[in-house]
Each structure stands twice: as C-alpha cells, then as structure tokens.
Length: 282
Image (cartoon, rainbow, N blue to C red; front, side, top):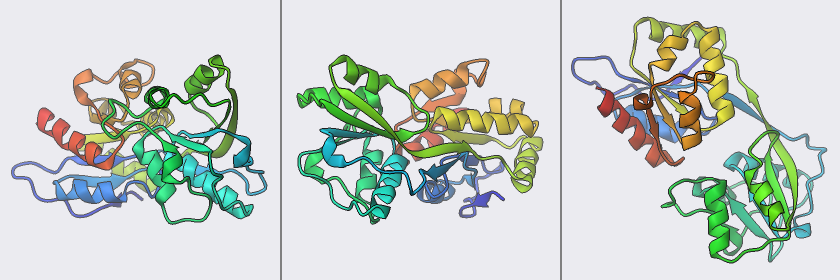
C-alpha cells in the first residue's frame, strides 16, 4: 500500500498535487514530510529494491587499493555492512574514498557498523558543482592532482562504466565490486489501484526519478496499470540531465521537456524543484 506522509496543507480551489517518491525504501521520509508541509499529497512508491551482496561474498581488502569509488549512498552502506560481517572495521590510512556527490559521501557518517572513510581521505564533487556524477568526480580528482593506480569501483550489478574507462585510459588498474543489486519492485494490488484512481480523476502528479533503472521500472508499472498517458502528462523531477533525455525519448518516456525539472540529488534541492515545477504548471 502506498504510504502517505503528513496530511497535505489545503490549497484553495483545487485538490493537492500528488508527489510520487520512487527512491528506495527508507530514503524518502524526510523529503516526504517537507513536501507534505508545502501542500503536496505524498505517496512513497519505491521503484527498486536494494539487495545486499550475500554475506559470504568476500569483501576486497581496502589496503590493496589507492582509491575506492562509491557510486551511491547505497553502495557505501552495503559495503560497510558486508565489511562489518567479516570483521573489517577500520579504514586504512592513505586510502582515498571517492563519492559521486555529497549525498553519497554523507553515508560514511551514518551511525552503522563497518569502516568509515576519515574525512581527510574523502573526495567528492562540491555541493555547488553543476552536477553530482562521475564526470564531476573526475574533475575534482584532477584538481587535486590525483593519479590512482589501483582502484576499486563499488557499485550495483549494473551501472555506467564511464569513470572506470577514463581511469583505465590513464593507466589505472580498475576492479569492480558488486556490493548490492537493484531489482525492480512491482506495484502490489493496493498500490496499483491507488495510482489508477489518481489517474482516473486526472490528479496533477509529480514523479521523482533518480536513476535510469528506477525510471524504467516506474514506466513499466505505469504501463501495466494502464496509466501510461497520465504518467507521460505528469510533472517529472530528475537528478541528472541523462534522465531528462531518457524521459524525452519515445522508447522510455515521450515526456515533454516543459514537464521535466532537473535538480541536484539533495533533499533541499529536490523539494525546491517540486515546488518550482508545480508553480510553472499551475
């Protein structure tokens, strides 16, 4: 069943807009509260389930690398949990930990077992960077003159290979480690009926998408529920220009550019994007 956050604040003359938050379970709660306080009806509808690697999977020895690159906060958490199970609790001095953005880097400070990269050995694009992605992480590394030779890329089972390819071109040995899997999360009967009812009454809706896999999973569920035209005509908040391009493509979206807002993957920026797009479409 979709989980509503707080009752939306009343907006004169029209029903509240629906904010559909599709990030994995546990990553939407604070944003849901903020959006409800701004008058949205909020539904939590995770597109993907995150499944940690089997506990029997041997985590690589951190000391074997100059640099560990984490593609998401989920990668940080899954890697820390796996290391904790295997008794690897400390971060070796001199080993850099790279993150594609501040939100990913923040996972090192979460209170959980497993090794946490000391702040002096962390690198990530700044919060003011134009985008939080591999391209801006590499630029941050170049600004520091970093030339790692042994790199571990901690990721899900699928993902972009852009950074690994650029590092290999520079002579680095890059190994990928699958710390978790992202699996599409089908809507159950109650979720499907809830969304079908919203579509039937043509409720204004805004969908958050933060990964290509999540976007594809949501679109598939909308198609199976028979609400794809409504989904296409909804507002969409995405956290990278690549996702906006996918939404515009006929195969994955056919959504008009005016219905899409791009923002950084930080809760404060996502909330502002929801509010700005609602204002633009009112």
